[in-house]
Amino acid sequence: MVREKEEQPFWETKKLTEMTSKEWESLCDGCGKCCLVKLEDADTEEIVDTDVVCKLLDLGTCQCSLYETRHQYVPDCIKVTADNIETLSFMPPTCAYRLLHEGGELPWWHPLITGNPNSVHEAGVSALDKVVSETDVEDADLEDHIVEWPQDPSPPEPWVHYPKNQHGDLQGE
Image (cartoon, rainbow, N blue to C red):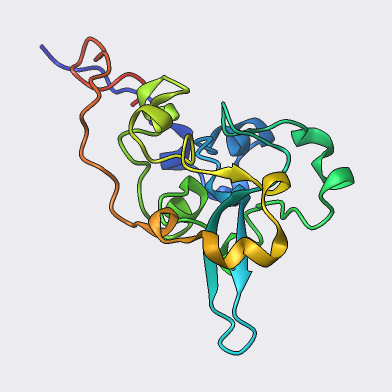
C-alpha cells in the first residue's frame, strides 16, 4: 500500500517570519519557563534562572493570567518575536521558538506533536509544581532561589504514550 503524500506541518515548512499570528502563538508549549524571574550578574552579565515566576503566571496551568494585557501590569515583559529570538539567550533550550530558530525540531512532548495541551506538564519539562510566585518572595531573597533545571538542554525520554494515527505516527505529526 502506497502512503499518500501528507502535508507537512507548518513549523517544518515555514520560517518563523512567515508564520501567521495563530501559528506563532501555537508554538508556545506552555512550559512557563520564560516567565521565571532571572538575575543578571552585574560584573559578568551572566543571566541565571530562579524558581520564582511572574506574578501573572497561573501556578496551576503555567499560563499567563492576563496574556493580552500583560504589558499594562508587567511593562518589562518581553514579547518573543521572530526578530528578537536570536537575542534572547536566556530562553530555555527546549523553547520551540529557540529550537526552530536554531534549525532544530519540536520535541516529542510538544503539544503540536502530541495533540495534548498538557503533554509538556506530563513529560515533566514545564515549571508546573516547581515554582513560587514573585508575590511570595522578597527581592533580597531571590539569590536563594537560583536553579539550573530550566536550562537543561536534554529533554526527557518519552514515557507518556500518546495515541498514534493510522500511519503509526504520533498524533499531530
